Amino acid sequence: MSALPERKYTIDEYLDLLHKSEERLEYFDGEIISMAGGKKGHNRATRNISRKLGELLDGKPCEVFDGNQSVKTSSAPPFRYPDASVVCGEAIFEERRGHDILVNPVLIVEVLSPSTSAYDRDAKFLAYQEIPSFKEYLLVASERAHVIQYLRQVDGGWLRRDVIGLESQVTLESVGVILSLSDIYRMVTFQEPELGRPTSDAAETI
Image 1 (cartoon, rainbow, N blue to C red):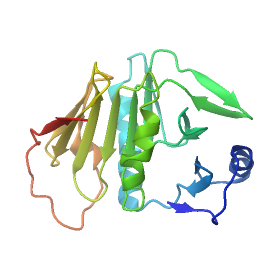
Image 2: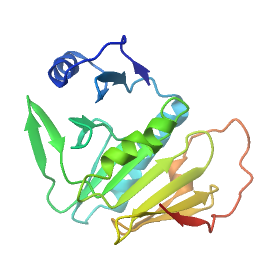
Image 3: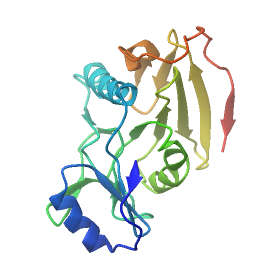
């Protein structure tokens, strides 16, 4: 992830650049950020997640979108590009200058890298929380087998669960399937060998 030369851009200028660009660009408070250039671990995990979710949800009234699908974020207009998202029921889109923006995801997935980790955990998550349909957020580490799951609670808070180790699974409550970390990290190699730690029982509400 890298920013274009420092200056404040308008949303219209951003949309003009996006139409001309061959890479994903995100707009945040006047800054335009390039989302290209992920390392192979990040790219493989991203591909594995979209593929496996498609398999698990086959036959269910849900649709999986990859990282090319933008998602509307009203509190940080005009939209973000998650690494994967899922809609159950009819997918609703909003058109803006020839760009189809997804309005109603229930599940959003971001695969972390050193350059995007803080952004995905903080500013991007806060923007996603304003989506009424949004129920579940997965933050997937790309350098070790670790998935952070956030589940929206009835009171509007978010329950955090940490799932650790290639032998572990994460239950995706928003779409009713179980995703194995071994499937997420298929063909992903880590700098340090995994120790096979069990799923963490720790959970916290934010």
